[in-house]
Each structure stands twice: as C-alpha cells, then as structure tokens.
Length: 210
Image (cartoon, rainbow, N blue to C red; front, side, top):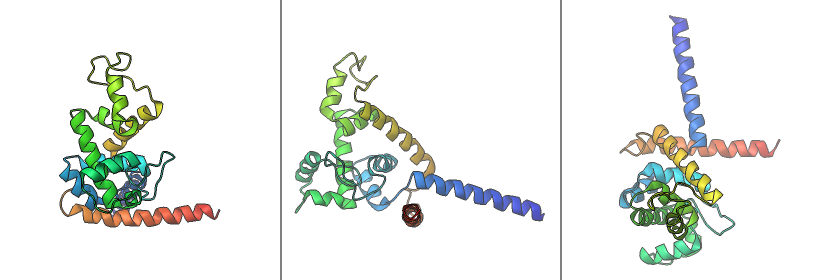
C-alpha cells in the first residue's frame, strides 16, 4: 500500500513538473485585459495569449528594431491609427508599454484584420506581421495564391515563420489553458503566472552570475 502511495505521489509530482515546465515556455499573464478585450472584439483569448507570447514573450517593455512596442508589438503607425479610432485621450507611443492599452489596441487591430480577411486566420496573422497591403498583393499573385482567397506560399520568410509559430502557440495555449478563461479560473492561473515570473527572474539572475 505504501509503495502504491509513493508511486501515485511520484506521478502527481511528475505531472505538476511537466505542467509548470509547459507554462514556463507558454506563460500567461494579464488575463484580465486579455479576457476584457478579446470579448469586446470577439477574438479567441487563446489566440491573443499566443500572439503576445510570440511577439514579446510577455515583456511589457519589448521594443523591436522597427519601433514596435509592448506586449503585442504595436507599430507607431498602427498605434496612432488605433488611438484616433478609439478616441484615446493623452495617447503617446509610451502608452504602448501599458499592458491594458497595448492589449486593447492589439485586439482592436486583430478585429480589423478579421473583418478584412473574412476570418481567415492564416491571412490575419500574415497581415499582422507582414502588413495587410502585402497580403492583398500576394493573394492577387498566382505564385502565392492558387484561388485568390488563401495563401499557399508566403514570400517573406519572417512572416511565414511567424504564422507557423503563432499557430503552434495557439494550439498549445488551447491545450494548456483549456478552462483558464472561464469565470473564476483565471485568478488561479494569475497566481501561478506571477510565481512563474518570479521563478524566471531568479533563473536569469542565477545564469547571469555564473
């Protein structure tokens, strides 16, 4: 009986370890804003979470060489367009480092692309990374689109890899956080998420001192 209990405990610890490991690779933070704005703009919150992970790995201070900022790496052009459409008062590019503002604009933009590309996720993601103008050009080119409605080849390597990476992340987020965005569950995941942030910071400090 004692051996059976030990085996069960071992299996439970192993499962917990795997679960924590997965959440280190596929973290989830700022669920309050993800839930609020994904609901407002009718987007799957798992998709928003996946895009944030690919774009910035949940680093609110992330900034790209192209000046894209924050969690969802919003470009200055998109930010100014969105802030006007959303009537954001006292908006500046520094506002993109605010998780609430960044996620709101990111979700708004995904919704815009969703309407433009009729819910075609691959096109939406390609446009989010490579620009909707380029996607529309590719759709008119039979070298990249056989039917004018879907992309069978993406000429930008970065955009092609981005789409594949987000789709993979999206699949993982739906599995790992299956019930997370249901009422009440997100608080538990937020607590775990905060613990993971602390653990990651400690790990970085440890590696920096080696």
